[in-house]
Length: 130
Image (cartoon, rainbow, N blue to C red; front, side, top):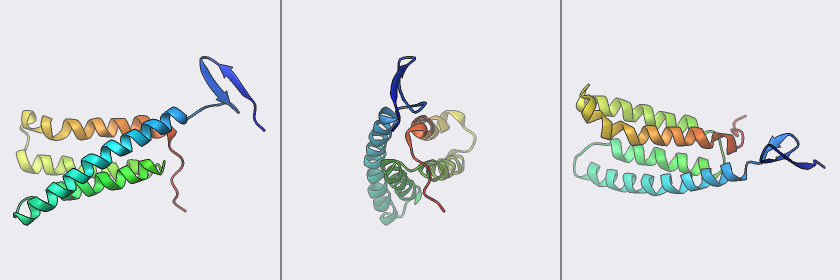
């Protein structure tokens, strides 16, 4: 049985900090991404019906998969979201080219989400691939 001690303002078990707060943050992020992903997917499907871009439906689906993986505490959420982020980057340059001011609303939020996923990564378990 491992001993719990107090060290440098952090509770430590067997030499490792507790990860409960990181896991809770990952769950909250998963919920937020799930809501936005569902909205993007629904709106994207409607846009496809109207003859518009497929980007929003694909990105919404990617966000939902990322949210599910985060909720399951699976590190595979990062590579899945990186694919969504790269797709967003390609779509943004296709849509507006190198007009940097036009890129800001298309790329800032997805980049912030990428940073948030990287921040909660310490609280996630290992990828379940074997």
